Amino acid sequence: MDVTTAAIAALRAAGWRLEPPAVPRTRRSEGTGPAPVDAVHWGSAFSRLSSPDDAVWFLALEDYAGAPAGAAEAADDGFTWNAFERLSLDAAAGDPERAAIRAFWGRHLPILLSVRGPYAYLALRDDGVVVYGEEPEFEETEEVAPDLGALLREIADPPRDHASRIARLLLRA
Image: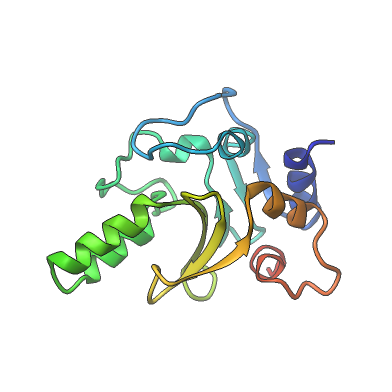
C-alpha cells in the first residue's frame, strides 16, 4: 500500500469522511504556483477529506481551481484555499505589511485548513517542509514534517500517545 492510500485509510479509520475525486487529475489548476509532484498526487486522491466534525479538512486539487491568490470568492464551505492569507491581508496595517504577507504566502501552499479552536493550517513551504500556523499570526509557523511524505507516513502510523502536533490536529474530534 502506498503512503497516500495508507494515510487516507488511517484517517478513515479515525472517522474522517472521504469523497473520491470526480475525475482523476494529474496537474494542479492555475493560481497556486508550482507544487511538488507528491502534493499533486495527494491532492488528486480525493475531492473531500474532512474530520468527523468537518472542522478540519485537506485541500483537494480542485479546491485551488479558479481561485487566484487575490480572489475573494468563497468555496461552498466558506473558505477558499487562501482564506488565511486574505484574513491577514485584511488585518494588515499598511502596504509594507501587506507586501510581507504576500511574500510569505508566495512561499507557502496551504494543504489543510482547520476551524476547530483557533484557525490553523498546514502548508508546504517552497523548500518542501510542512509547516503549521495558526491565528492570530498566521505567518508565524512551526515545522512539523520535513516533507509531505513524512507527514503522510505519520498520518498512516501516528505516535501511540497522539502527542505530536499532527496527531492532535488530525485525530482530535
